[in-house]
Length: 350
Image 1 (cartoon, rainbow, N blue to C red):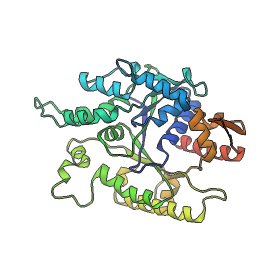
Image 2: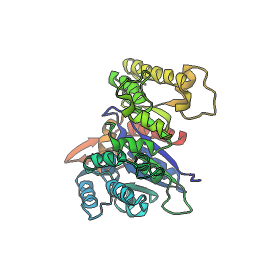
Image 3: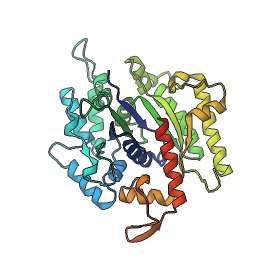
Image 4: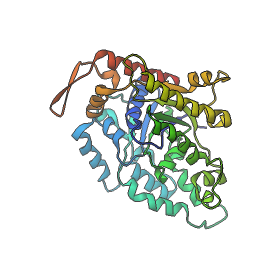
């Protein structure tokens, strides 16, 4: 049995920081776990986490286009295509060793790059998944939906376990569904706003089905098909409060919204605790739940701008100012230290 670990970063709301968190969590995890290979699988057509990992800015875009334009793309699209055609794919053909491109990253950090062509192959994947089985043992739907799950059970080298971090698109398209199925644990980033709170209900409905099934459409949903195929879904690992105002701790208005999101998650936990990762400590109250499942990250602010533009992890951000597209950006030491410490706390709790 594989002793790999795998985490998917997803919320069905855009702008919650999935790609930024993926970049920082993967880079810090790799730094602190040199005995493991850390692999980012970018399942978002926008490939933002790929860009950051490959050094950010214009330079990363040229590297990305080079990977995409190969006869056999060295991207997630290339991997999925081979796996679909052959039933399997060689992971080593599609990984990019990031330290060879971005000197700020550890040599045990790797990438299977994002690719805008995910949008183009999505209808083809759906068509294959829904094709008629050729025999009693043939299961086209399960074959397609297991592609990323089989990927995250693989190793680059036989003697080193892998830890996978999967970045996603907020849409619940088929490639996002494959990404979700591919992981053991689900990390849910949220902003301190009402739409993030509403999105929590959507997340549960999309993954596990609505509490009241629609009389006509329910049989077509991912949740129903996953249940019918006995497909294991990831357990929720953490609710990540992102982009909060924290000049004096979390500001009261933002903290109120954060509390509301935790309330909704706790209500879901009380109804279906099996959908959440097991904890060593018994959870008897809402406060217990918050302590075990909620982590408040710091607002990256200017540190986030610099990190995205230069592919610079928080642990390597030592200067007080950086030049981004000709403009000098100030990054206060206190800000970057608090951002780094919050991210390290998350890494240590995984």
